[in-house]
Amino acid sequence: MLGYHDQLNREINLPSVPKRIISIVPSQTELLFYLGLDEKIVGITKFCIHPADKVGSVEKVGGTKQLDIEKIKALKPDLIIANKEENEQNQVEELINFCPVWISDIYSFDDALDMIERVGALTGKGPEAKILSSQIAQQFNQKTIQQSNLKTAYFIWRKPYMIAGKNTFIDDMLLRCGLVNAFDEDRYPEIDAKTLIATNPDVILLSSEPYPFKDKHIDELRAIVPKAIIRLVDGEMFSWYGSRLSHAGAYFKDLVDWLTKLD
Image (cartoon, rainbow, N blue to C red):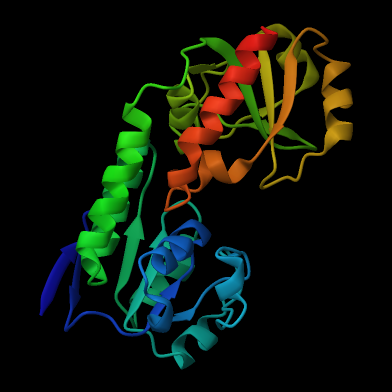
């Protein structure tokens, strides 16, 4: 019996290296494929879109918060990879009743690297995961990203406006960019135009997910805070905490170089 702990410090016991894995977290699905586990991935969610050339042929088990429990049972997994924030607790508890479930809990860059290495160990890909984690850490430790200290509002939703606050992975990634979160509230607070005006951010970043902000929304927000620098950004770079992080360092460098030239 192989014993592991997930990021909630729950003990996960597996009789052997898993051969039938279901991932219900998009960024962790991409990580599993990156680690070369293609043949062992038997189920993913409809939101698991990377890698695009591989996910199409894998059975879909619903959405991250609306799982088809019976379909998951029918696939007979020997391991399910979940996340505390992205999946519904009651559904995860149902899954635990019939299959080992490894749950990630990620608030920071360091948590993400820890997740990568633990998932690698869990799936028999420990050396590959350690190499990936080391490469990502090195990319961010090279200090090639300027420290701008620009006060930044990171929007994740519209109607109502919602932003990424403190105690989130996105907030930690903003810090890695040398940006300062304009809001002190925890998690994902709702804000209105009056609050935005009072906060007076230097920069507004409009994420591509979960709300798909477009160019027209730049004009909408510019009418509220005309002096702010406003830009659409790739939300995956700020919120996907698996192998996509290997692309994030270069993306952040280009973003902050652009912002500081305009400041």
